[in-house]
View 1 (cartoon, helix red, strand yellow):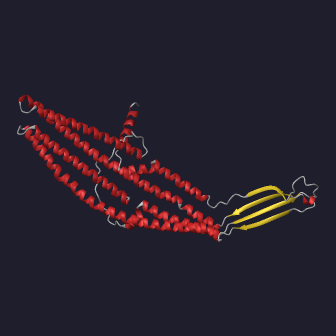
View 2 (spheres, one colour):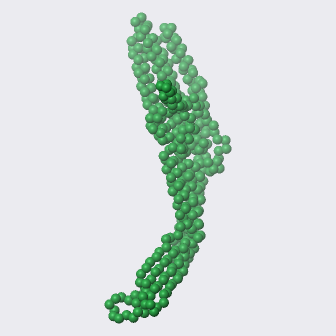
Length: 410
């Protein structure tokens, strides 16, 4: 029975250590990120407004006296004492205005739907950047640990040879210094890994210290989009769809403003009970109609319609400019990425293997006492520098892949 909790803990710990793929991280961000949840609440808020768009104004009721004389005016006959009055009034909005307002309000929640898509694309790009950054850091720390082990081995060999006058004390100290430098680089890279994991946990709305591992075997390659054109961006980019929707919402608002030239209605009922029993009870019923087509009333909504038409045209031109700019920028990225991919391939298949061979030959010569430790350290430093240059180029490649994927929202 005592083994059960231990086995359960081990299984849970093993499950927690499972590497997360990029798609799993994207899914957690989509479901748990607080910034995206805020959009859901805004969408529900806008939808709730649509439900009340067809409501009428509350009726007005009143009670009081009607045509009653002021007191202290001498003897007044019963017929001149006035009446007790009850009044009720109801405004009746034009049905066309109600429909236009509903149509306009129904577009508002979709604005936040597209806004959420834009925000998710930004968060997804940030997560991809952090994930690729971790891939770089894991490669970097692997290089650094391997290089540290090589230098420690050379230092030990130099210490063994020193008593036999087969090496100088300065070479030992030089190797020792390089070992400590490698240790510092490992500490710095390890701190970068922790920082990136904290940032990823924050995106997924997890505790900062939650255990997270990534798929270090992931191979990132560049695959350009074959059918990339302005039509693709117009149908895919969430910010372009957002702008297209804003144009549509502007048209609905223009239509709502056009309905202002239609009349509104009001009905009023007054009931009078005379204070004199000899006088009959009376009532008044009035129907009223607004006249918005008079010149001093038309100016307001006509100027608003004119202004919104200009704004709509400006948005269309801005959308066209954005599509052209996006296509040019993305095509330029494709060209750069293809070149960078070739450079990285040269590092992996030619430059690094050649320098590794040079270092191995230098170490072998030193072990056979055919060269000194300085030659080995020179080869070690050359390999270190080339590895860091390779990782720097690889990081730029990953960053541009992230920007490209963000541009095409893939």
